[in-house]
Length: 205
Image (cartoon, rainbow, N blue to C red; front, side):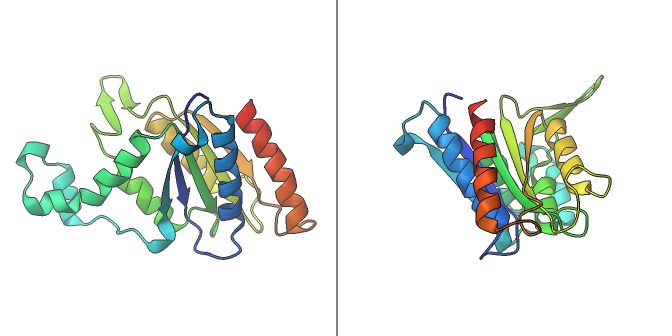
């Protein structure tokens, strides 16, 4: 990878002791280290979803289906956060999404992020041959942890959904980093070290 424009998304409700937050920091540093861009010129956008995101409402939906040059001030304001989130992902070559699995699926706030960036004619478009994603030339990493669900297994609806959605908006280069055993086997330090090596190898590949 030649540049290091990174969007780092944390969705764990746990601010302290979060496995996914810790591993996301490690992965981000490996991406920067593998880039030809000088470290001081690397751009890391941090979006912490634990602070909350709104669910869209009738005003948002109406604004989304109104042509940009016809939107009212209220409608433009309703889409302001969505526009910001989309701008973050558009300007990034690397998207690092850290998420635990809650009740077999995504944290609600991460699903809210998905809903806010899924905009027809902005992140995808409809054609006579079906939808086409508009977010091209990007690589995504999914840093996932679970206390009991096997990542990629039948009861893991989170990774399957995220991979499908990312492909829908044009991001097909997706790597899953499985941190699901961190709380189950060995010490956290030992497993984190092993995952750090795994991530270093993935980024260098």
